[in-house]
Image 1 (cartoon, one colour):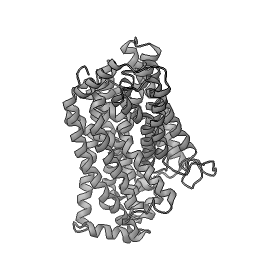
Image 2 (cartoon, one colour):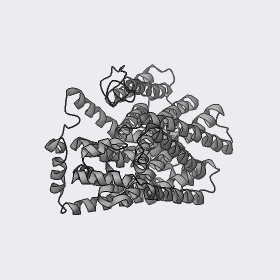
Image 3 (cartoon, helix red, strand yellow):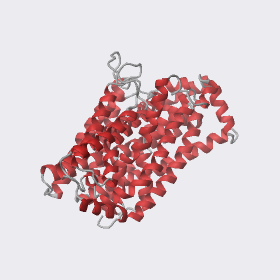
Image 4 (cartoon, helix red, strand yellow):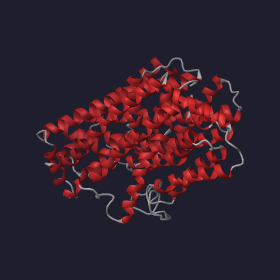
Length: 532
C-alpha cells in the first residue's frame, strides 16, 4: 500500500499545473482584498493599528492567524508524524503559552501602549535609549520568526512544483518575500488583518475537514489511527510514548525543559502578537479577542494531533523525510494521499497563505517599530511628520523583506516549529523581563530596562550561534564545521533567567531613579484603559 501511495505521490507532484493555479488564485484574491480595504493608509493610526476599527471577534480570528504560523500547521504536523508524542509537545507548549501569558498581560499592554511595544517599555523611562532597545529586540525577534516562515515557504512550494535543487528553492523563497512586501506596502495593518482573517478561517476549516476525513478512514476510532501510525513508523510503539525525541540522554531531556520554558514564556513577548491588540477600540474588545483566538487555537491544535499521526499512518516517515521540505511536508503529503492533487493544491495554498499572512504581520510590526520608535522618537525627538514616518516604515519593510529572503534561504530544510521555538526564546529573553518589571515593579528604572533587553538578547544570540543549531551536527545550518560549545539547541533555560537577573541588577546599580507618579499613572492606565 505504501509503495503504491509513494508512486502515486511522485506521479501527482510531477504535474504541478493545478496546484499552481490554486495557489495563484488565492494570492490574486487576497491581493484584491488588500487593495480594496486599504486605500487609505497614509496616517500612522491606519498604517500601524488599522485605525482601531476591528471588533473583538474579527481581531480574535486575526490573532489566531498571527499565532497559527507555518510552524503550527507544517512544523508541528511534521514533528508529530516523525517523532510522535514528543512532536505533540510543541502544540501543548504553544497553547499553554497563549493561555498563561496573553490572558494575564495582553490587556495591560494594550491599555498602556498605542502602536508598538516600545510605547509600553518607555512609558515611565527615558524615551530615546529605551525605544532604541525595544526596536532592536523587535527587529531581531521578527527576523528569527521570519526565518521559520520563509523556510517553510521554500519547502512547501518546492513540494508543489517538485523542485529538489537548492537554487530553485532559493528562487521560490525570493518570490515569497516579494509578495509579502507587496501585502505590507499596499495594505498596511488593515489589509494585513483581513488577510489574517481569511487565512485563519480557511486554515481552521481545512484542518477540521481533514481530521473528520481521517477519522472516517479509520472507522472514527482514534485507537485504530494510532495503532496504524505506530505500525507504519520505524519507532514502532515508541511513537506513542514520551522520549522519542527528547529522551535519549540527559542533554536532550534538558533541551526539552529549555524548549518548554521558551514556548510558555515567549508568547507574551512576541511584538507582532502584542501589536495586534492595538487594532481594537477598547479593552472590552481586547478581551473578546482573546476569547475568540483561544477557541480557534484550541480546535486547531487538537486537529494537528490527528493530522500528524494520520501522516505517519498513510504516508510514512520515509516518504516524508525524503520529500522537498522534509518534515514540513507531512501535512501536504497527507492531503495528496487522501484527496489527490486537488486537495494538495488547496492545502498547499492554505499553508502558503499562512506563511504570507504571518510574514506580512511580522514585517509591518518590525517596520512600525523602527519608524515609530527609532525614526520618530530617537532621530526626530518625537517631532516627526506622520506622513514621513509612514514612508520610513514602508522603506523599512522593503529592507526587512530582503533580510528575510536571505535568512530563509540559509535556514531552508530546518523544521520550522523548531525555528519558531528559537524565536520564542529570543522574545522571552529580550522582552519578557522588562515588560513584567515595567508593569509590576515600582523601582524599575531605565538602566534596568536596558540591561534586561540587551543582556537577554545578547545572551540568547550568543548561545544560539555556539549551539548545535548552527554547527556540529548533521542537521545544523552550517554543515561540515563544528564550533559549538553550548550543548542545548534552545537557549531559553539559560538566557531567560539571565535577562531577569540583568534587569534586577541594572535597576539596583542604576543611578537614575524611578518616577513614582509615572508608575502610578501606568498602573491606573493598564488596569482601567483610561487614557489609552
